[in-house]
Image 1 (cartoon, rainbow, N blue to C red):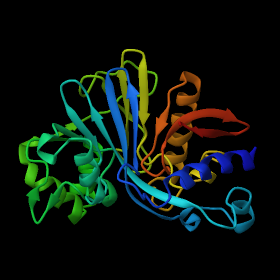
Image 2 (image 1 turned 180 degrees about the vertical axis):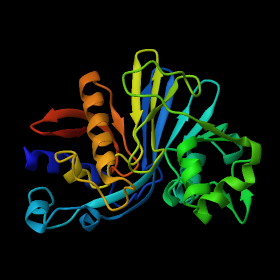
Image 3 (image 1 turned 90 degrees about the vertical axis):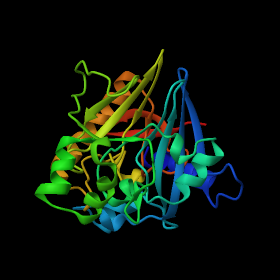
Image 4 (image 1 turned 180 degrees about the horizontal axis):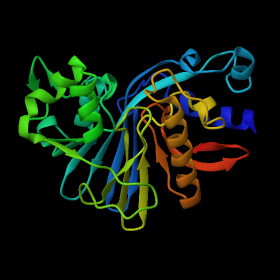
Length: 284
């Protein structure tokens, strides 16, 4: 089973390797009448050293000697009425990929933030100027409080500053509860632990569904089959592990595809229970 999981995830990395053509690094998935495109901003060799409480013998069960790839992704949601970006990455290749899909920064109506780490908000501003001139920025109240007041991060403060009153805070709902749409067809769900306000977004239109799960994991080869293993980036590792297991369990039981910001191309796939963990099958 462990080799099967590793093989399916590695094949995703192989598919994405190099981004030789213009369309590489973009994977589009239909959710009803919505068009959701995963955009790879960066890809590099992964580092399992960020995982907490595991040794080399444990890691060798899941990670091949050749290593593995790590990706930083964003998601662009094109609805009949709006262009919505989920996270901005560092603010590099994501802009070029958006343009290939016919969307300029000025055409983005909303930016939804899963959380406020630098690799998710780095594209909001440059030199104090908002890079999305018309967009509202949506961030959970707990993350905004934590990164701009409780544990002040200069990058987070700078990212939001140019948007002023266009920054909208919200309270995400709970898995399984009735949740009001944040935007039409998009529900925010609490997945606290990675950060105090880490949020995942359930995209629904018609019978189509997709769970954009942010940083629910960082080393897919390990954390799908062993979801209780957390990373050093997690503000609350124990809570992050509980949220990760809850996300995977919810997706598996409800047969909802999951997309992740640190899963290799296509970064979207189906989750199934497997022993005490889960396995991930990337979509074609």
